[in-house]
Each structure stands twice: as C-alpha cells, then as structure tokens.
Image 1 (cartoon, rainbow, N blue to C red):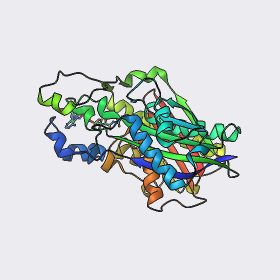
Image 2: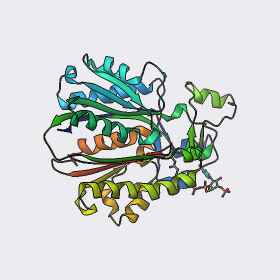
Image 3: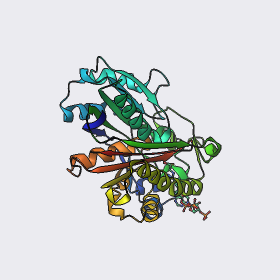
Image 4: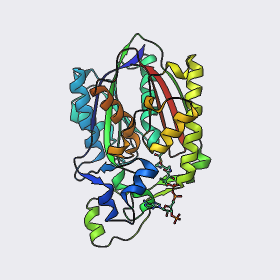
Length: 323
Ligand code: ACO
C-alpha cells in the first residue's frame, strides 16, 4: 500500500508585510530583497499560533477530502516553532478537527520537516500500521526572527499546509534523507514566543539575534545537496529527470531553486514557486505550495511529483510519488 493524497489545505495569516514595510524597520529595500531572494512579501501571525494555523490547514484538507476526521489514524506536524514544547501541536490539531481516534506527534527538522513527515507517513502506511495520515508543516518564523537583523528578517513568513494520505494500491513511493550535524552552526534558531513585536520595536527593542545563519554557506549547501538527493531518489526508482512533472522544492530563495534546476538541466518551469507571496515559511512551504497547485487544478492523477526539502541540521531529503 502507498499513501495517496486525498485532500490538501493551507492557512496563512491575513496580515501582510511587504518589502517596503520592512524597509521602515531595517535598512533594506524592495529591489535588494527581490533580486537576492525573489521574495515580495510575507504573511505574519498576530494572534495566530503555530498549532492553530496547523489546525486551520488541517480543517481545510478534511473539508476538501470529504473524509470523516474519525478515520484519521495519525497526525504528524512538522514544526520548529510551536508555541508550546508540550503538549505537541499534533494534539491541538487532533482536538480542532475532531479526529477522535488519531495518535499524533510533532517532528522537528526545520525546513526539511514536512518532507520527512511525509516519508514517515508513507512508512506507517506501507507497514500497514496506519490507513489515513494527516501530514502538516506549520511554522511561525516571526516569533524567532530578530526584526532588527536585516540579514535574516527579510527571509521568513508564517503559515501552515496539510495533506491527507490514504492507503491505496499504487506505484511505490521512493525517498532519501540525510543529515550532517557537523554543519549545525551554519543555521541555528532560538525560539522567542512573544507577541507584540511591532510594539517592542517602536519602543526600541533590545537587539537580540535569534537566528544565526551563514547565508552563503546555506546557499551553497542547498545548491549542491538538493540535486544530489533528487538524483539518488531517481536512481532508486529507476526513473529519470524527464519523467518528473513537478519538482516541489522548499521555498527558501528563488536563486536556489533556479540554480538547482540549472544543475539538473531541467526547465525551471517544472519548479513551481510561490515565495514571492509567502517568503520562507520553513516546514510549511512545501505543503502550502502543494495545496495551491492542487486548488488551481495543476495536479492530475498519474503525475510524478518530486518533493525536496533542505534546512537547519543540516538536513535534506527528497521523495518521489505519484499523484
Ligand atoms: N538589505 C540590504 N542589504 C543587505 C541586506 C538586506 N536585507 N542583508 C544583507 N545586506 C548587505 C550585506 O550587509 C552586505 O553588504 P556589504 O557588501 O556592504 O558587506 C551585502 O548586502 C551582501 O550580503 P551577503 O550576505 O553577501 O548577500 P548574499 O548575496 O549572500 O545574499 C542571502 C544573502 C539572501 C541571505 C543569501 O545568502 C541566501 O539566500 N542564502 C540562502 C540562505 C537561506 O535561504 N536561508 C533561509 C533559511 S534556511 C532554509 O530555509 C534552508
């Protein structure tokens, strides 16, 4: 058995900060941000918490799928920014959607988290342990950002995306995943679950750095490792790059995605992007993009989809599945 997607959903906060808004907080400008990253704006949580956004995305996925939430056996939430260390966000989602029979837990592998959660769900299903699994990526990066650090605050946004996998006979799913803890210092984050950051800034907040990032190091890592892990999955599947309909990559930076497409000698039109609108929502980028594509009718039965995630850890992973 494999897990086939039977419903998708996403949620982003209505509050939007565009690049011009950020230029009033830090010394930056729209042209610099667009040119270096492809980002135009980001949605930022106010009262919304990570687990609440996860629940909203899950509710939308349930509604689209038409399943009874009681059928869900397992809820996996990939996040590194839940408002509580415990209970886990998955239990809040379980309550919000009324999934009375579901187990659930959170996974943290930063921006790679959703792809790893998707792989875990597929493993549960192929082992016969679960029939229906809700897989969510949700993050509130705005709680971790130092809004006085222009090198990182421009990159991130908040949101959540969800897919429901249901056991069916089908083409096997292929996956590969890696980590390298030696490279941990190139990207680290400390949480700060505080609200009212705009007011703090206006009052002259103390400058603290919550995200430490070697931007160029992360850029080089992604451009090298993402093509490698995609090739690894293709080899295992006995497939080629030409067989893939869409490469749905973690949305960190337009230039990273373009460089990966170039390295794979594949037209960039097969690499959909939405980071202009949402920026980098960490574990949520991949499922938000899947939901958008699904709702636009871009995804049809039998298409081959390659997911790839990369981020802090360092971690990176890819998965090939059929829609
Ligand atoms: N606005 C204006 N100028 C800026 C800004 C800003 N927001 N940030 C940095 N600068 C300045 C720097 O101070 C520097 O000035 P200097 O030349 O006078 O010293 C200049 O711009 C160039 O800075 P670099 O850091 O060299 O710029 P770079 O071209 O490397 O772009 C960036 C930075 C966008 C972060 C890039 O390295 C990148 O995208 N790296 C990938 C990291 C990433 O995507 N991280 C996301 C989280 S990780 C993940 O999701 C996997």
